[in-house]
Image (cartoon, rainbow, N blue to C red; front, side):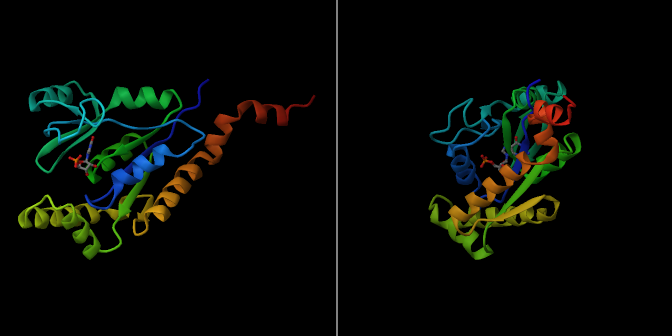
Length: 209
Ligand code: 5GP
């Protein structure tokens, strides 16, 4: 029987460095295949974003139809757009033994926790409010109004930090990546995982031959 993959959720306010951390994690050598789930969204693609790779870009009508057909593990409205995680896609990946990472907000995290109590949830925090603001400003793309809006949204996301299993403070990137790797490896070493991974070993160890 194939070993089941682990499910991880990473949530963070925008500007905390979550996307860079996930992509660096996936580039590292790993004992298991790791994939980020590709969400569905009704927001417009940003320059360089590819349909099916960064998101599945759908219309509001399509999204609502998918809700009606119960296709989502979870979905939420974030910044005025819908975002959702497809249930069949995730289950297929987990069944193949793939470790799956969901880059979703706190609302999605709450819904997945109810459906998958074994999920490992990680909150990525900026080292300070000032640093978060600096990072948002250094992108140089947003108006003052947008920056203030993003800061308010960041505060809303941060207000849920107590609901997560792990917290990573992304002050130094390499340290934050090492922390994330430790959390993933820790999960893989849990007894339940090891027993599932090494069924023949434990059968053999206990056999009277
Ligand atoms: P962005 O539009 O910048 O890519 O993402 C905005 C926010 O939506 C981020 O906080 C991201 O984690 C969240 N998000 C992306 N996909 C999903 C999803 O499938 N479900 C939920 N609940 N949030 C998502």
